[in-house]
Length: 201
Image (spheres, rainbow, N blue to C red):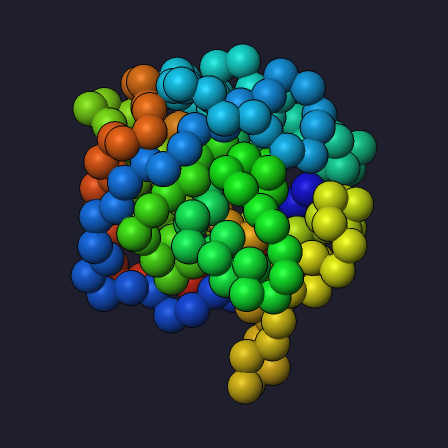
């Protein structure tokens, strides 16, 4: 489900990094132990430092996405946690698509946050103790069209300057573990220094 090279950021970018991002809320948490496209919502998830979400197929120190495993099974897993803003579903509904929490394969569905404009290295504090460090943008693949025909091209567009804009959410790694559930607060901690826009991982 991701683009091939996480070590060298791809040219695709999200919007310019946010200067003062507002806090948000966890709308849903989603997990699946098998390689299915969608992940069913659950009451809560346990984030494990350096691994990902307990019981989720994409948890691991090294890559677990099937495409990336074929390329290099020893590569560091930068896609342990996938986050999507709930607001995306309303945008898709206006285009004729019906999408709910977890159906695009995300682990955490957020509410009230501009995820795509966050800079590289942003730390998202979820609930009491869990922290997810943002590593990049999710690159949508053709499996999205298998879920709903035509959905893929609504999530890949071009800005006025020709830059590819992706709206399929962001990826991160677990920097600190903890339990996360719907209704938990999300606090944004921006990295020090000049903000770096997200590339594809």
